[in-house]
Image (cartoon, rainbow, N blue to C red; front, side):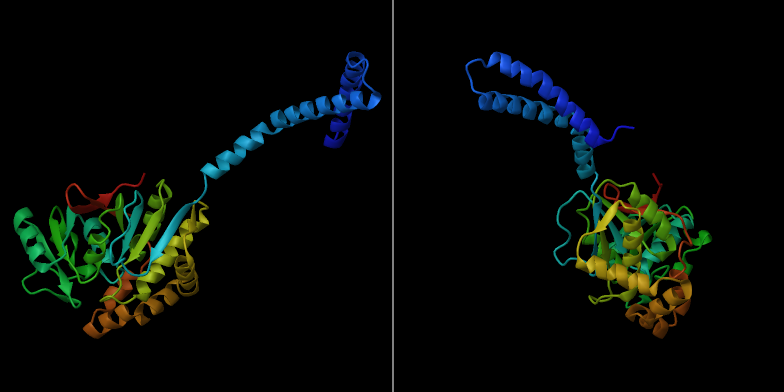
Length: 313
């Protein structure tokens, strides 16, 4: 096999023999140095043309690589106070304890849709309009007169099948309303982690993960899930962390969510976890920390104002 250096030398020799002689014949009256100069220019131009043709595919490949740069994934450890910037991307709303987990559970068990409501009055009005179940909490406790609270175990099939749920919570539904200008809004939690990862892999836009927090404070359990989701997406090669906050959340999740017992301990130790333990809802923490318990992706439909179980692409 002839190596690339040998090929170039042979090519150069042939050009000199051909074009060097041509210039000497055509440049009568010029000195030898001028003829050599013209021959050199010809060789340079032809070699350049040869190089462009030879490496044209590489140039196109480089352009293709630039066009396939990874998408950005950005974690908001609290909902942006002024809402997300107007964009065409996808948002995942995270309220591990417990709105996200409860919405996934209710839809898995047969609820037709969930109407996320900002206030208790909004929820009551929606329930009347759609003959819907009333669900939600304030301060972690079921609202007086509501059918259900915010525990995922309160929405079994015999309660929610074929029903619409009007739902309001202290943190989760508020975070969703602060993200309404996104093109797509998903609901994510540990219980549907892989389903959300698979769904986001098939999106073509950047991704924002919005943690609901607890009463305006950062919630470790939300950041844990957000970091774990971002980590898995980054591992696919299709996403890259958009900022340092995202990198910190990824590192935090890789340290504390590397096995089920450690994850459960971390969720229990969070502020949200401690609040639920005080209220007697430790079973809800165990439910919420169960990775991949379900396989649906709840998606908010701005046309109907409802969250429904989405289909994986």
